Length: 125
Image (cartoon, rainbow, N blue to C red):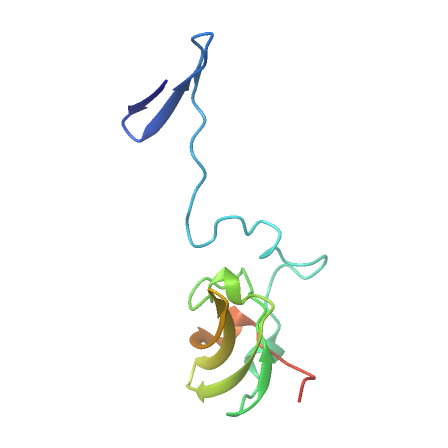
């Protein structure tokens, strides 16, 4: 028997015990504990070289999310993907990435701040 009380779900077992476990979260950063964690001795202040990087239209970039910057952070799906720069603004970079949707390979364009996305130049030129 499952009873709802407010926003909590109570599942009653055969012995009558009530399980007060909350359901799994479905937020935009759900299940990213290891994905967005920063590496050993990489925590703390973001290096200035991150902000001094220049990007040009047509560059291949690897998207690596920096969890220390929340503003302009790309969605977790794009972490580790390689794309082509199609737009450069003062604080952000537009990247076209191939995305597999229902068996079709679609070109998806995302906008992300370059310090949150921690874009690195790719060797796939």
